Image (cartoon, rainbow, N blue to C red; front, side):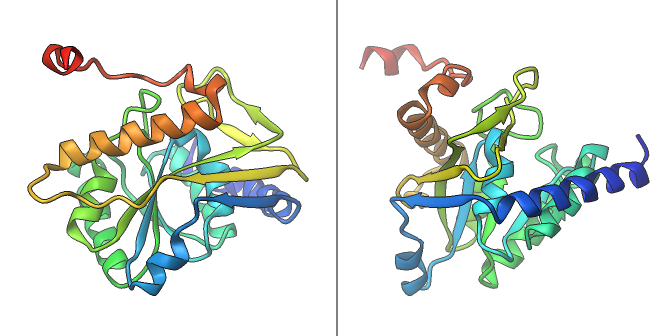
Length: 228
């Protein structure tokens, strides 16, 4: 698929989702964003790839989102723009895929006060296996990570895809569940912070969407940690 066709598909989908968005009823749980704003602290949404459609609809306008440079990314870009968001092209694939440049751009934008969102197990999974982008972005700025899962009451699920991507049905209720804001601890590595974010996202999905949580990729814990 060439980029022009991908853009046309993305534009058509973006129009459809824009119409759908105005029919949805959003409910936010454990929402501490106002408290963060009043304290002058920014926030970074860390969510699963499965929730990126409803999550984009639920996030405030002007949110910056990292998008793959692949052809699939060409479809996502106009969709995000219809939601009032700013796509930043890159991926978790590192410098080869523009990931380093994109992350540096997001660091600058978040430091200037913008809200960011990352599908932290993307672009290729496995489902629920969190990569380090959100942890690194928080460590390089003063922004808190907000683990979040966004669940439409009525939805379509692409069961043949690795992420089991979800689409809200028009006129349904959408519930956004937040974990408490997270910051890197003193002396904590990016990998350790990433693992804490992953565990919180798993906890949220197991609690609020247990049927989908069955498809999470769970890391093997070290023997000594299991024994403890």
